[in-house]
Image (tube, rainbow, N blue to C red; front, top):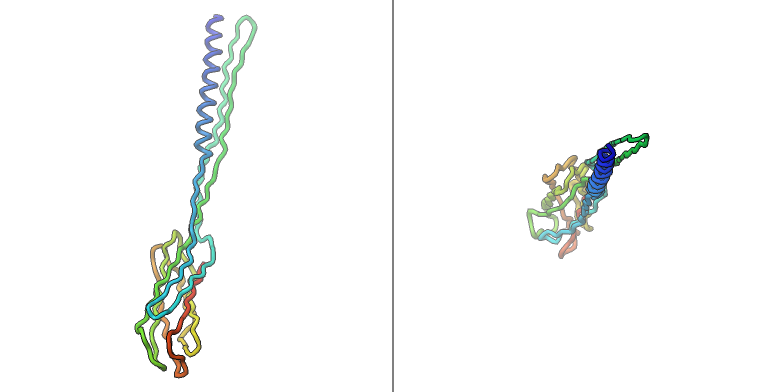
Length: 197
């Protein structure tokens, strides 16, 4: 009977050490973290008619995706043996804590500019086409495109809005720009700005 009690005690100790070894490996796996970095790009582009665009973006969290990996494990194991009035107790207990990783999705906006004319004379009008693309991982909402015209130019609207640009989609806007008779000769820059939520 004494040999059996010693065997059970050794078996309980072996099981306890095996269980703690398993928990330490599981804890290392739970503690490894996922790093997700996103880059916000600010781009400046120029069309063939020396039109310059500036992309000013506001940093917004549009869509959040929570990934939760949680396990709560509690195990109580007791082995007790009694021989000749002496008792031996071996117990183990372990708890794993939950871990939450948050991934923030953001839109990534780019511009493409074009005109229907490469040269104009005083008093002529031309179309400025602005294609706003969303290459990010979330929808861009309330996308406002504004133009900053040099002296001697006017437009039908200084700002136009695309309500929503979905992921991997685009919105095309046209501005009708007119040069006055007092416009200076030479190259002129028209700045285009984009803001979104």
